[in-house]
Length: 124
Image (cartoon, rainbow, N blue to C red; front, top):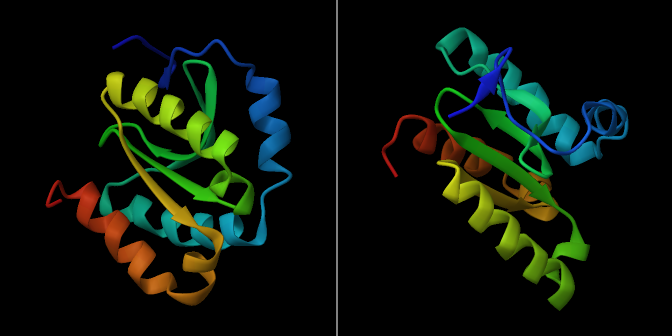
């Protein structure tokens, strides 16, 4: 694993990740607020993290967990296909990728956070 200053190596720009942090969706903002609280339990998440050629929504690097919050564009053939390739690359780098739809965050937020917590503990 090739971490530099606490980050995995990435071929995508850190500047682009910074830009995305300022453009988070309401669902991402809500999830981020909950994930930040997990820091005190030993799960320091980062948001808009460059990994390889991708920028993931959230990552707990030590636990090797990536959380993606997806909008409707991910449900179309092109988006779903790109997500499969992306997930394969991230899985190949040792990450568990958890994907949630925006409506899941809105309609069943507690279940989303509980699912993430289970994966952080390696219980899934």
